[in-house]
Length: 152
Length: 99
Image (tube, rainbow over all chains, first blue to last red; front, side, top):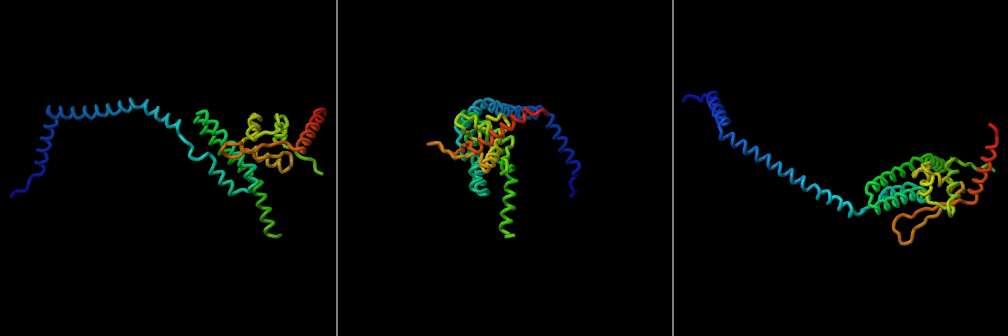
């Protein structure tokens, strides 16, 4: 038995494929499939575009009914309460956070969502600004306390 | 006895408090009235220092039936008022000095 001539087989297969590719039936099928895919994609895109106003309205509705899970600055309040003395917490950090809370609530009451978000960011900035401004005081107190503890 | 010192920010705070209707203000009101000279973050640090010097006094206020954190209202003490008046007199006297 002679071994199969793979080169010939491959060439004949290639010829057959080229014939099929060039045949009107194949062209028609490919065009049909391409048109089908394009039309499905177009329908999908059009449906998305048509649904855009509803999506925007839904986003706005959800935004209006959004509830505050946790007031802004509540984590910072817990942190400051744990780190600083009771007096410092009540005289410096609590007023900053209560101002933040008040301004935030006012913005929410006026349905100014972006302003509320900005107030929350600015309030956190103010809090850390106060932390930095108090660093010299805190450092001096730490040194004095360590000095006293050392008994020198 | 040392002469009490008064920084520009402290003087501004005393001025704002003395010109307030009931001589008392919240920190946020001071920030808004200062026209950008006082910052939200540092005003309370300054007020704490002034309270230690005895220039101002403060009290926590919780609005009835309102949830949330209590606010702190600040007022001038007698010492604060005298220091401000002394500073004003010094400034007026210094204004008359030819440079």
